[in-house]
Amino acid sequence: MSTKTAVNPLYSGGTYGQILISALQRYPDRVAFESEHGSYTYAETALHIARAIGRLKELGLKRGDTVAQLSGNRPETFFLLAAIYISGLRSVTLHTLGSLEDHAYIIEDSEAALLVMDPQYVERAQALRAMATKPMGWLSHSPTEGFEHFWTPSSAATLPLTSEVEPEDIIRLAYTGGTSGRPKGVMLSSRSMATNAVFALSGLDWPENIRFLCPTPITHGAGALILPTLYQGGTFILQQGFNRDKVLEAISQHGATTLFLVPTMIYALLDHPHIRTFDFSSLHSLMYGASPMAPARIREALDVFGPVLVQLYGQTEAPSTVLALTREDHLLGGEKRLASAGKPYPGLTLQLLDDECQPVPQGEIGEICVRGPLVMSGYWKQPAQTAKALEGNWLHTGDLAYQDEEGYVYIVDRKKDLIISGGFNVYPQEVENVIAAHEAVSMVAVIGVPDPKWGEAVKAVVVLKPGASTSADDLISRVRNSKGPVAAPKSVDFVDMLPLTALGKPDKKALRGRYWQGTNRAVN
Image (cartoon, rainbow, N blue to C red; front, side):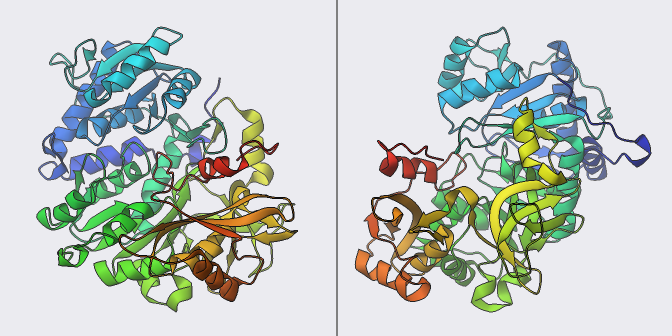
C-alpha cells in the first residue's frame, strides 16, 4: 500500500534525519548517552548509526521495509531507531510489558521483515519466532544463542551520515495500547516526527545544561525527547526500567537536570518513606504525561521536588506535543490551574468541537481536535478508522475538555470513559481529583459499573498510601459535598494496586471488565 501523500516539493519541510544529523555534527566530543551498557559521544553515536545502516543493507532490507524491536533502554536501541529513520525504513517497537498475543499481532500486521531484540527478552522472541507465519530475520543486540548478532564487526559504516528520506515518508508505525480493541498502527511521517522535535524545542522548559535521566521506555513516549536533548548538546542517561530507589539515587548521583515520568511513577516516588531525605537541587524540569495527574498530588510533588514540574499532553496520533503546562504555569493561577493540561504549542491549531464538528462556545465542553504538521498520516491498513479519526480535516483525539478565557485547556475525560448514570453525565476524572485530594489516597480510578436502577453506577477503586486508612463513606461524602449526589460513588473498593497498561496508565478497560463480565455490554 502507498505510504506517501502528494506534496508540492516547493513547500516540503525538513525531516527527522536532517535534524538528528545536524545535532550529531554540532557536538562531536560531547557525551550523548550514558547507561549501564556504556557511554557514547556524539561522534560515536553517529558511527554506530552508520554501522546500523550498513548492517540493514547487508541484510537486504530496502526502503519501506518494516523493522521491529523488542528492546529496553540501551543506546543500541536508539542507534537502530535512528538508522531506520534516516534510511527510509519503517520502525515498529514492541512494548516490553506487552502481551504475547499483541506482539504477534503487531509483527504480522506491520509486515515486519526483521526483529531485533534485547537478550533479556529471548524467551518472548523465541515464542514469537515459533508463531511467525512468514520468513523474517531474527537478530539480537548482544550475542545470544540461537540468534544472529546484529552488531557484527563487519558492519559497514559510511560517514558522514546522509538522509534521503522525504518528509511524507512513513518512518514509524506506532501501535496504540490496545485498551479499546486490537492495537492500531499509527503512521508517523518524518514530517510529523521532525515537527514533534521542533515543537518540543520551542515549547518546553529546558535547562542550559541538559542531563536527561530516563527510566521510561525510549521505544515509546520518552523517545520523542531524545532528539530535542541532542540538538541542544545534552546527555541522555538511560535506566533499564523504573525502580524508585534507583531513580531517586540517580538524580543526585548523575546531577540530573531533566526527568520524564508518568504519574504513577511520581506517585511511587512521593510515597517513598524517605522521599524528603533525597537531594533534588540539580533538577530543573520534571516532565510528566501519558495520563492525568491529580492536582492534589501535583501540589505534593511541587512541595517535594520544587518548582520544576512540566506537564505534557499529546497522543500517538499527534505525538507528545499538543498541550504543555509549563513550570511557570504550575506556580501561577492557583489550585484550578493545576487541573489544566496547558496551552497549545505554537504552530498547532486546536479547537474544541461538538459532534457536528462545530466549535463549542468558550467554557463549554467539546472534543479536543487538532490540525498541523504534527498530525499522523492515518492508521496502517485501516482506511475506515482513518476517515473517522480525521473527519472534517481535524484529528479527533477522543478527549473532552473546556478552555478558559486565558486559553488554558482543562480535560474532563475520555469520551469512552464518560459515565451516564440515571441520564446524567459523570466525568470520572473530576471525581478522581476529589478523592485523590484525601491525604490517605495514593491512586484512584473511577468507572461506571452495571446497575439495575441507574443503568451505570459510579464506582471508585482506591489504592491507599502505605499505613494510611479511610472509609468508603468518608470518600463518598467528600465527592457528594464537592460535586453533588449524581457524581458521588455508589460504592468504593479498596485494592492493593490498580491494573496498569504497558505504558503505566491505569487500565480502565481491564478494571471495567471485572464488573461488566457476564453482561451484554462490550467493554471499551
